Image (cartoon, rainbow, N blue to C red; front, side, top):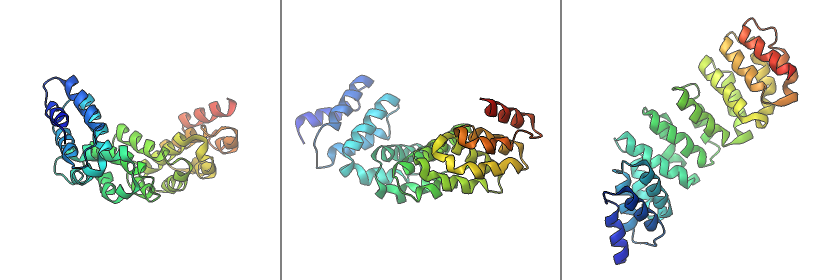
Amino acid sequence: MTNNTDRLIAQLTDPDGTNRRHAALALGREQDPSGTTATALVERLATEADSCVREDLTWATVQHIDTALPQVLGMLTAQDADTRRTGAHVLSKVGDPVHFDALAPLVSDAASDVAIKAYRAVANTGRPEALAVLATRLGDGDALQRDALTGAFAGFGEAAVPTLVEGLGSSDRDVRVHAADALGHLGVDAVTATDALGALASDPDADVRLAAVAALGQFGPEAAAAVEGFRSDADRRVAATASRLTVS
């Protein structure tokens, strides 16, 4: 480790956020197989309050992930929720399939901020089994949490369709609504779900039917026949949505 590296590590605690950012970025470009730089970066990540500095520290930590990994993995099991969230955030940037097993438990974390980060991190591993783990959270949480989960499914594209179609058959109406929404978000990548969504025209819940017809509207002309099944729906929202889609 050089004197310059020592100076930069000391600068990570500078009162001026701009100076801390410069130090983090410079350390990210440093070569330090000893792990001293990685340790300093991870330790600072645990206490840094400035979001811009945190992002630069995250980038720098990713550059040193070979030596930082044991500490980052340790963050995933910390008692402090913010520490778990930070660890998941770092690994979401790495996107290594080997981290799936360590990240998967955080998908069900009681802290929504941690779970949201875990959705993306697990998806970014690219492991096929990530889809089943993500599916356990369909219908859970507030709109922000559901949107984050939908985005994680979207990262898999067409490969996510069978898992989401399975969700359409859930006994939980919130799961059915969310699965339909996620299929709509996939757009034409989910066109093979047309029949499954069309079958929801007989679902007893109007919100499920509305989500289904809205999703079909993202598939283009190939879904026109399925949309027809919703035009005479007893719920005016569903019927109106189907009619607009049919004439457009």
